[in-house]
Image 1 (tube, helix red, strand yellow):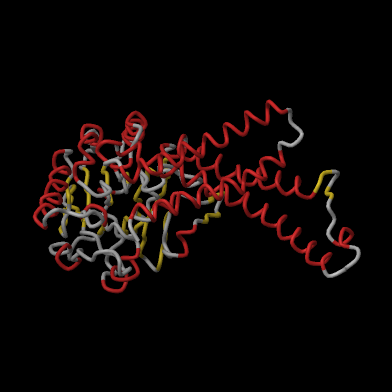
Image 2 (cartoon, rainbow, N blue to C red):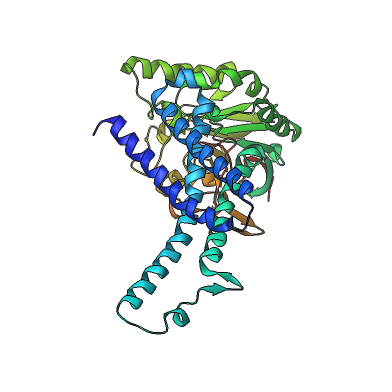
Length: 419
């Protein structure tokens, strides 16, 4: 099947959904004046025409011509439009199935149909009730996702934690660590808001800053316009960073293998330009008053098959054997249970990201839920098993959906205390 035929079928499916939903719109607006009905009709079908036009624009005009942000919002707009209409379709389908049942029963001579399947609900017809219910329910995802883009995408939250470590050297007692993760600079559309997030980090006055991977979505060039912003992320004891799965360029087609290798080299160089210490299966031992604390950073290592395992823990830990406290930067939280805890019990805390909290969830008091919990045992916040800790940052940026709903972007501030 050719691309144009496939896209044509999808477009016809969109029109069919719109036509079906329009029957409900007519039911809901049946008591309005003729002029108001015409206005509603024109607006409704104008949105359909614009949506179909945008759909073909996305697929047939080059990304360079349309622009990255425009393409993102085209697809998100289409998704929100038809995802919400599916709720309306569900309610209209209920009404049509009831009508079908009435017709079948009446056609075989059954009596009392109207009594069994009442046509009125609270003084309005069943069809009008279901159509209005569908309209209300379908508006919820529209409002929620739109708010998630306008407000949630850059609603940065500072989350504070205190972790007590019995082996922490006195010289590092009270050290304040800031962690950010999953910047995904290729997704940003509001540079001013990003600057505000960086200012929030600096206002916390951390002693040291960790970045746990995914600086970009696919290409090193995505961070170019944000190097000056993230270059301001500094701390007295330095900024230490690692790579995430998206940093390797695995999710985009390259003209040659050499182009992919060059992209990764450019990405590594970006960390250096910003003044960040990129740890590639290596460590940095901090020393105060003769006492030591180790920062260990590895390349991406994911337990799930679709994610790369570039990390080399044995290599990264060399020279830290006698350091009393070891802090590990590893992008994927699945690494903790799969390798860190079974083989490296001397790692005190692992800092990770990767999950984004799926950019959607509910967090009320001590309760937290997100669909990502069914994929990752540890997906947001602080975890402890035996004497080891894992902290999973919910991410600074976003990927795919350009927003967040109930799972705001996070700046972690962790203070280490000696017991």
